[in-house]
Length: 85
Image 1 (cartoon, helix red, strand yellow):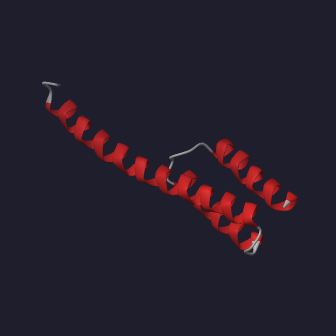
Image 2 (cartoon, rainbow, N blue to C red):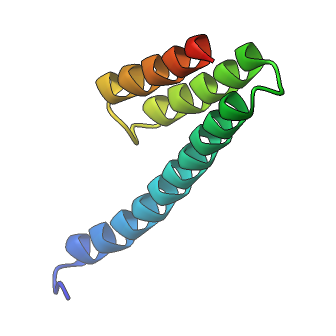
């Protein structure tokens, strides 16, 4: 544990940020899994599913949780799988 007041504050701030980032990553993974499942089943409209997944990815980038190149790669993979289905 830190002894300096500012470092104690940083520990608390980092814990809050970690929790926030974990929640965003978790919801992103859920959205991606749901999109993959919907595309694989082929029952629903793939365009809406891809749009929802892309939106979740963009929100994660906006919050700084994932890198923009990672987001581009994930969006391309979702679009590719939707086009193949």
